Every structure is written in C-alpha cells, then in structure tokens.
Image (cartoon, rainbow, N blue to C red; front, side, top):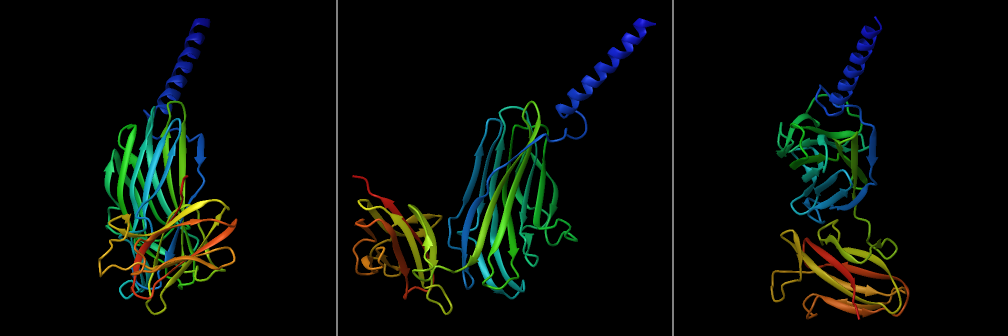
Length: 352
C-alpha cells in the first residue's frame, strides 16, 4: 500500500515536471506568460510640416536599435526622402502623409527563440487615422514570420484606443532570427496646420531567452508640427552634426530658418551647406546653373553678422570660424530664388 502511494506521488511529480518543461519550451499550445518586460526610452524624431504639398525634409531613414545580452533589435523607419505631405488632398479630404512607415525590422536571439513581433502606430489626436498602403498585406516582406493580425482605419470599428495601426506577426517554428520589411502607410491628420502631432511608434518583440519569456518594447516618438524657427527668438537649438531642413519662397511658404548652437571661445568651427540628393547629402555641384542653395548667415551672441555664404558669390559653400565668445551663435538660412529644395546644414569642430 505504501509503495503504491509512493508510485502515485512520483507519477504526479513527473507529470507536473514534464508539463512545466513543455510549457517553458513552447511544445504545447501557447507560450508561457511573459515574466519580464524591458521598455526602452523613446527615440525622438522631429519633422517639420510643409505648408504646401511637398516632400518631407529629413533623413530618409531613422534607425532605432538595441543590443542586449539575449536579444538584438534593429528597426529602420522612414519619413523623409520619398515621403510627401499633402495639405489639401482632394481625394482624401484633408492633410495626409504618404510614403511613411517602416523600412525594415530585424530581430535575433543567441539562445532560445522568437515568439512574435508587434508594430503599433498610436496618437492621442482623435481625428487622425492611418491605413496600409498595400491592402491586405501591411508589410511586403516577412522572414520566419506569418501575419496574424492587422488593423487600420478600414479594418472595421476601431477598438484599439489610441492605436491608428496595429500589426502582429507570429514566428514560424522557433527561429532565432526574424525579419519584416516595407510596411508602408498613409497617415491622415485631419487637423489644422498649426497642430503638432505626436505619433508613437511601438515595436514589441516577445521571445524566449532559454530560461524565461520576455518582451522588449522599442518606442519612437515622431513629432510632426508646423514651421516654427523663423526668427532669432524662435531659433531651433542644434548641436554638432548635420541638420536636414528645407526652405521655399512660395506664398505662405517657409523662406527662412534660424538655428542656434552653443559654442566655446577658442573653438574652430566649420559650417557648410549641403544638398540632399538620392538619400545622401552632397556638396553643391558648382557651375550648375539650375542648382540653387540658400544664402547662409552666421551671427555671434550679440546677433551681429560674422560671416555669410551667398549663392553665386562664394567659391565654396563652407566657412571656418574662430569662436571668440562663449555663448549662443546663430545661423540663418534663407532663399529668395528657389521655389523649394532640401538642404543639410553641417556644423563640425575643426581639429588642430
């Protein structure tokens, strides 16, 4: 009798152990509950809203990546070269952004496997909405993933709260790497020009790291608002590096941009203007009569002119300044000739 009881207890323990093992490794239906979630800090991505129907002045791609001990995530979003804003779209009935979305998403784990990938575009503005550019197929490419859910403005009643678009793709098998590419959207703003949109783009990866089920959430905040930096007092703060923007001299356009950068006495700084072409920034092709770049002025902290680059007069579109005062220095970029173009303002330290 005692041996029978011992055998019964042993069989129960073995069954419980096998169940836990199968659940942990995903061998029965559904993964085990996620026991740890890592929320990354949002990467902020600011874009200026053109007043008219124009190409968005920006980097062509915005990369957000995370490298951890048990997961690697690399996401490339786009809202730039090839993306256009229509202020008065007759067909769609209001302002919209097209050629917008996610270029690629790559996830890999050194151990365990990936369970699913979710992508959500959400915004508090109740009037805005979004739809997939390719009906019924949000992304054009999937690697070790199969689409399990996709919701946009045409997918029935919107029950996702602030979500404007939601996509979930489940892993096929138990892969250590997955891929998603070319998720293209049309984003409908349905708001006045002076409204600033804050669009959160959340990428959520669920995976098993060999021990537990985890989630990684990579958010990106896209701030899409009206032109604002049109005077010294409204100058946009920048740092060293290249800042993409645009100017145009159309009616109600944006002919001038002001920037400010904090510089230290004794620094030597190179300031140059580049053109954006074919996803890259290039020095202006001198001698091209059909090419225009804006005029550029540099002011010290007293807002006195220190240097300028005038199209057709300067032999080069770069200048080196010896900084003689610590404080805010200003750069004005202005056009009165070209209807519209993109440019890159590059500010860098000169060594030596």
